[in-house]
Length: 79
Image (cartoon, rainbow, N blue to C red; front, side, top):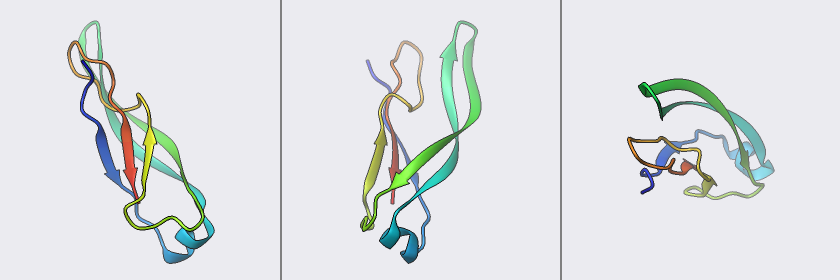
């Protein structure tokens, strides 16, 4: 089975939404290895398209957390 998707809110300015941009967002991801759960900090480049609206979702497939006997879920960045 697949782990649940992980959602993150992205802070932005009106100018960033209008022009579009790529933001580096740092998150903690939780994965499983042979010895058990592991957490690490990782940065994702989140591309905000020009003219994006409040509530736009940027999805990175298979980049979410992972639980025991689960595939990684998706990571969702909510504008």
